Image 1 (cartoon, helix red, strand yellow):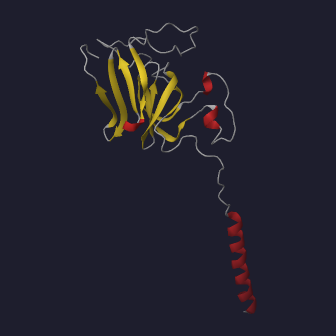
Image 2 (cartoon, rainbow, N blue to C red; image 1 turned 180 degrees about the horizontal axis):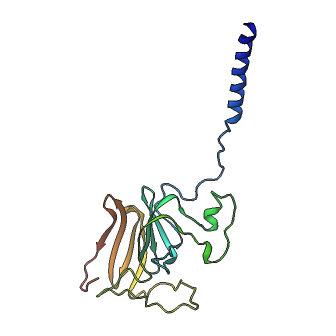
Amino acid sequence: MLRRQTIFPLLSALVTIFTHAAAKPEVVSPWNQWIERDFPFFSTTVDARNKTAEDNLTPRALIFPLGQDHFLAYDLDLLRVAVAWKAKDTPFLNASMSVNSYPYQLKKVGGGQGTLPKPNGEIWFQNGIYPGVGVGSPDFTDTRPPPPTETEVGRGGINPKLARFRGINLQSGAEIEYEVGTTRIRERFGLEKDGLIRHLKVAAHNKPL
């Protein structure tokens, strides 16, 4: 009887020891996320090429966090919404060195177009390679000069006489400002239950936009 009383406490102590040994301490990464939670926008190249949009690559994009893990990429060259998506965990599958140097601890990405940042998640909305604004009837062609090679997507901005980007007003919640012809337009993006919302403030104009 005395042996049984001695054995059971020993077994209980061994189980406790093994349980504590199996529980690994949580490792806290010294690296912070590149994207600040409260920052209204950031800039990067966005490669949204896929089966339905084979050429949707934006060399210069502004990325707007819309909330609830949704993001929107705005093309500064063509003044268009390039792509909007709901991210799975991080916004991009690949990222530039500035992105990777934080969560991936100094692991550099390779060169070339195959390692450009890609939207990580479900594509919500996207446009082709043509100006997102214009005067008169809609024109879905890219009138910029042709690139030096077929693989080069970046062709610079559209003719500034037709339209040009002016800047961002942070006092109105990351409101972009641009001109179409001589008409000034202010726009901001939002996420509501019905989907993507584009709020536009358009100055007086004589021709249809």
